[in-house]
Image 1 (cartoon, one colour):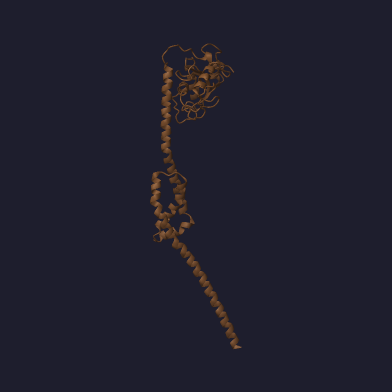
Image 2 (cartoon, one colour):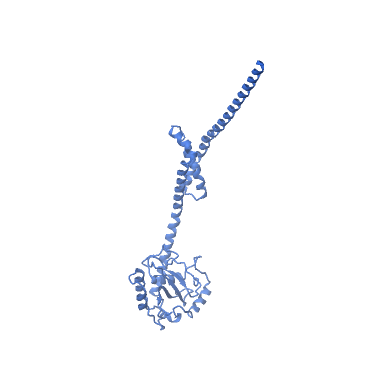
Length: 338
């Protein structure tokens, strides 16, 4: 496969322009955007470079220089950027190919600009934004994120020195030749400042989104619990067990408290199994006395049913006794007549 990257110090030049025009629909928003970015990033800088592969516009290879004043200083790191067909509406996936001690090799890394966090991605960001973000995030702590590593500073310095000898077989780039050389003794470049500022802004945006999510999630759970208990109440009201209560209400008997307490009794187990908000907890405490009233109201109904069955049995026994006595009487009367 012919390389799509054009190293600053020479190497194979791609024929990406003619190949891309013949293979892809130039009216597609994603293709238009990527072709434009490829033209803007065609010339390598002293801090980063990226170009699409000749046979795949949606896979780019990039090279970034390690940030100065860090354990990555002196390192040159290579990787892949895989873009979705919905780009720039959806974020790309970023994969490092050079051992660096901060990100795993060959695995999609978790950054606020990568496919792991589509909620923080902005369509106005570009591949150049991703390159600057990678540089800015390298000195930060991994904190257990997907694809992150926490090597010691000594290990990272050793990997930074070794990274200059890396050669990518996919695009034919040698790290020593990809980027423009740095000028010695110069002040921090504009790219370094942009990378730090971008990483700070993206981190701030991610923290704001996570805090909003943590605040809204309990409210959403309570709303779902409320909706779930309401649907259970509606189903229970229409069951045969409540027909007597509804009939008594229509006839004017005061059984409203029994019906409401029956609904509350069924809704309480659901709230015990899930987290409740302070408002729900307050409502549950306020409803608690109602459950005792329900038991008090329902108890006479249960006793009445038992008394009715006992009376029926007693009546049957008396009827049988009367029949037996009458039978004996008739038999004796017949004997006397003889």
